[in-house]
Length: 160
Image (cartoon, rainbow, N blue to C red; front, side, top):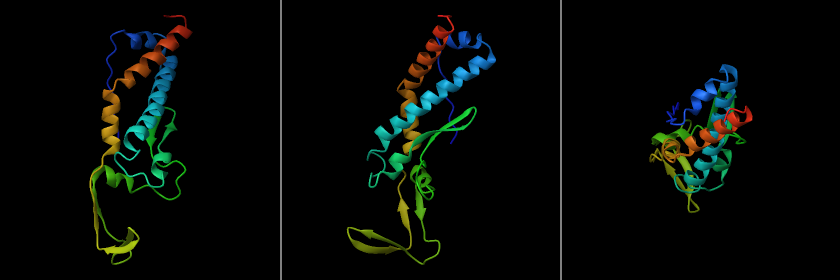
């Protein structure tokens, strides 16, 4: 899922940052993205993964939502850190869909201590990623972090 953020900049901080030179400006922008990503990971866990969208049984998904640096200019917030196996099933919660057995004729699971068998199970859509990101961006936190980081960088360079 690729997400773009467009920010208003009435104080022209971005112009001042660009005047520092491309290399320095890129470093500051990467720091902004890293700070936003870390904050968003915590926001998502607190507001969407504490039982609101997904039931919190073992806490594995909750604990696995982390900020990742994928490469020099790419950052992500995603579940998966420290979880053995795969978390492929999480995309099913985002979109909703049907689970069917791959090797057996039926799915087998326990419900209230009773073993239950089914040919398929439908999982309702619980879009914790898209809903949480939309709410996070709307909250104004991105702009607050951006201004804090930019202002700090400009002060450090003696430009503000």
